[in-house]
Image (cartoon, rainbow, N blue to C red):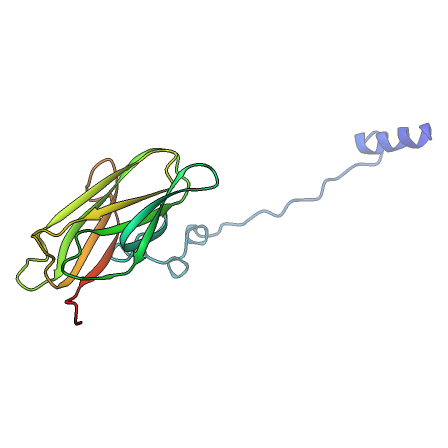
Length: 184
């Protein structure tokens, strides 16, 4: 047995007098740089005018929210009466969101614009809210109140921004809701 192990050792060390040759590895010849980059047909452009993705697991418009204790003993914000159609006498429109894991605290901002509301300029912000998200938070909400005593019927847009302040790079997406008269 010892003789076999010595012979095996000699073969691996190349001491048997038989030249040991390694198999040649295939070498990639001069390929063009675009072959190593993401192809445009394989990527989908991000839509900043749609509900936010990436950081957010979900985002829901609702008439209210509850705070529940989840199985890890942390507070979870859950939507109550989810909808995207509200009455003009609704006191507050809530946007409830759940987040993917994150490694730093940040803020979530909501900027309210009247997208198609008669008599209001769609480029003028009419309200906003912000929520600080701590490292341990997995959910949160934004609360939007009417700019006047009542909501005016029409379609509203909420820009969702993430970061320490609102700037050109902080926009994540947009949520929309409708204020309709009771009979509609």
